[in-house]
Amino acid sequence: MNPSSPKLDPRLVIELHQRLGEAARGAVVTVSPPPGGLRGSQLPVLRAWCGAAGHVVLELSPNRIRVRRGPVADPFADIPGEQRPGTRVWLYTNFDCNLACDYCCVRSSPQTPRAALGTERVAQVAREAAAAGVEQLILTGGEPFLLNDIAELANACTQQLPTLLLTNGMLFRGVRLDRLRTMDRARLTLQISLDSATAELHDSHRGHRSWDRAVAGIRLAKEEGFRVRVAATIPSERLEEARTLRRFLDGLGIPRSDQIVRTLAHRGFAEEGVELSVASVIPEVTVTASGIYWHPVGATDPDFLVTPEIFPLHQAITLVRDRFVEIRAQADTAAAHFPCA
Image (tube, rainbow, N blue to C red):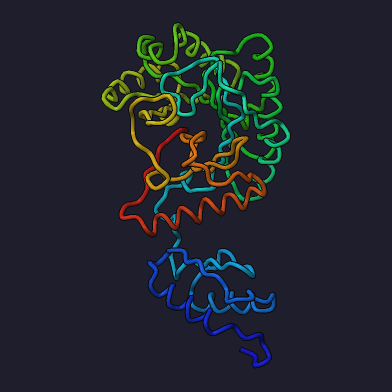
């Protein structure tokens, strides 16, 4: 180091060296600079010191320093493709719904306040997501087709990235069908909910005749030229029924790769199901009108709120990724993937 370079306070170097030495590989250490803070000219020196030791600087400001202990391998190397945090971004377009499913994880119903993101914010998320290296956008609700601007929302997303739109498939008629027909079939996939091969189980959770209308929606969407995925929510004690459902979906022309079966999560309206926490589930960056959440299954729960600040989106994605790395470094077992799409 050049003798004329700014000198670091030895107390800071000693504290960082000691704290990082005691930390697990991949863990994040936070320290405060000595009284008076760091001068701007000292910041690149400290960054170079950390880099030479194999550590990664996450935050370096006059009043706070956060460093991840290294050297570390790719913290996401064991997580398959689309499950890696930041690969997909979910957007809750709204929370009101034409159904009141008794296990809805975000308590959607006809009485739920809309809490819409709106076209302007959705378009900004889409632009910033593409710039941040996100590979797919996922629109969900509530029921997105209740929105008069759903076509604009979907097209703002598909102009930037391939997009998946979750729906109950029950509203494809009249002006809503017209809106569907303006959407980009090459860049938009529809995911429709269907919980069983017959109406009884599905309707018991989602409402009378909802199965008939969902199946009709699947058929219509396919006739309109959209790729259609089908997602089922089935209680864990009845998962064997998935085999019958899959055969039914085969008959509708839904490929096995586009058939998603998940169990109940104990969130929202659900009175039972898998217990999920920030530490037990791989995060899926989720945008709502209230901020960024850890995973779509907890997008109305305070324990899943990451930050109320949506923008800049790349900072929110980095925050989720860094927090996940920190949790994994502290956990005895890796988090599990809980599929919503």
